[in-house]
Structures are given as structure tokens and as C-alpha cells.
Length: 171
Image (tube, rainbow, N blue to C red):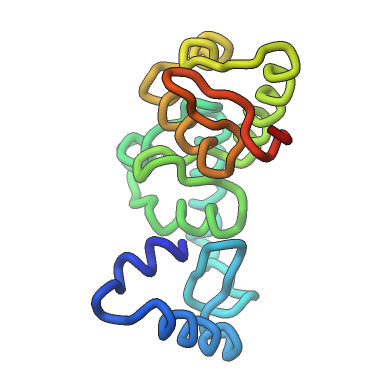
């Protein structure tokens, strides 16, 4: 992501120069951008067949995990291969979202959570961690990071111990 890239290069490259370099790399198609994420290679960059197969396996595991998917470490232990590059690819392609460094959620389940939030806030004015946990049968390990992730794109806004509708919902 743009923020992580800026943080990693802080002190080495001023922010204004980073923007110039990114624009140049994008125009030469040495870097691709989707939303606020970047990756090496042009827009038609594709994974080798072996990695494409692994990406389908990882994506299937994320979708099967629902709103409480296996962590990166659990995926690697279960699948027997490193998943970092694949998760980054799935995130770049819009198939997954990084909730925390260890928790990656399939886009399908994020959309289901967002739709659930829409319905929830039509009936209720406040959402607690417990509301999410009981509705989705998930542990606090997942419910708190997911709510914090949803606070960022302003689906929700934290007020004390509860969430209220964020700007995306018109509040």
C-alpha cells in the first residue's frame, strides 16, 4: 500500500520525490497500481501457473474460512508453502483484503459483512463487538480487528466501546 511504501522509505526518500518516482514507474509500466496498492510489473502481469494454482488454493481456504479465515501462519502450516506473495497478489487483484498482518479476509466475505452492517444499522443505532461476534459466530480474535478495519474505510466509526454508522452510510 501507499502508506506502507511511504513508511518504509521514510528518511530515504522525501514524500514528494516518492510521488514523482511512482508516477514515472507507472508511466513506464514497471509498476502497476490498483486503488492504493502497488506491485512490480505492468498491468498485464500474471502469476506463473504454479503460483496461479496455489493462489486458487489459498483463495479457496480464505473463502471456506468465512469471516474467521485461517491466519497466514495457519495457511502456511496447512498448505505447506509460503503464502505471503500469494496473499499480496490476491489483495492487489481485489480478491482479498488485509485486515491485519496475520488476518486476510476474502473480498466475498467482506462484502457479506458490509451488507450485514447495512441491515444492522437500519434496525440499530450502535454496534458492539459482542453484536458482531454473536451474529457471525466469531471470536474476539477476529471481531475486533475486523471492526477496526471497517473503521478505516468509514463503514463504522468507533464511539467509546461501540460503533456507529460511518460516513459511507451517510452519517
